[in-house]
Length: 263
Image (cartoon, rainbow, N blue to C red; front, side, top):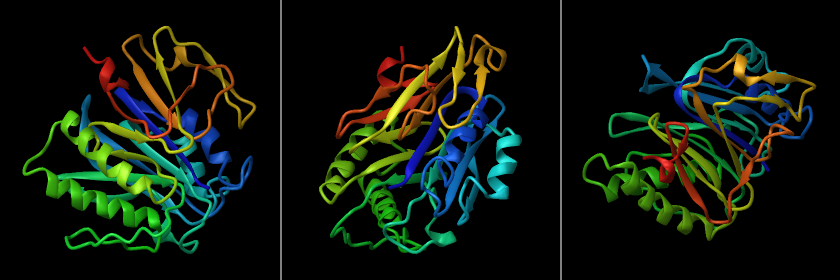
């Protein structure tokens, strides 16, 4: 199956360290070599932006020149969603690479999925249509359609989380539905089988990547005001406290922490 990587940050931050290890799973330290993609929401000063900078490639992340460029060119963002693909439904092609991007309520939304859905054939009657042939993009389009139907105006993160929890439960009846979703303001993460997160904040420590022989002192890269949540299928580092998400759990992260932890 595929693997997911997401970041939600209090202040604009780079995902270079995590993406360096994650990209190796796209054909080097793991077999997810059927394409990859990443979306960064551009920051407007220190505030989350509406627009997303978006890269996909049907080459493996471990060998893609675009992935190599991103490992050496830090893009700072409040919210990032990345994906490395092991194709199960849909051909190895550009249109089937995650994350997928759509507009709703005047903002871009990005979505990436890990898992397989069986006998999932929802009726699409709105403006959200798949471009590729994956069950993942079909699920995303249906979710966007139902979110739009459920709310007359722009909902709060709490209201939207209730809607997404219901939609995720309905889709998960058809198989494995681990996903990341972001609108640039928040990051939603849903676990069916396997998803972990870690909160990085002051005092920052040195971390050791699992997929590369590399250690980095995070205190040299962050200020005391920084705080990030990293969400990933399998933990990226060997010496941090990664929290496993339970089956059916949906978390929403804002300002580098779970919504429930906000004052």
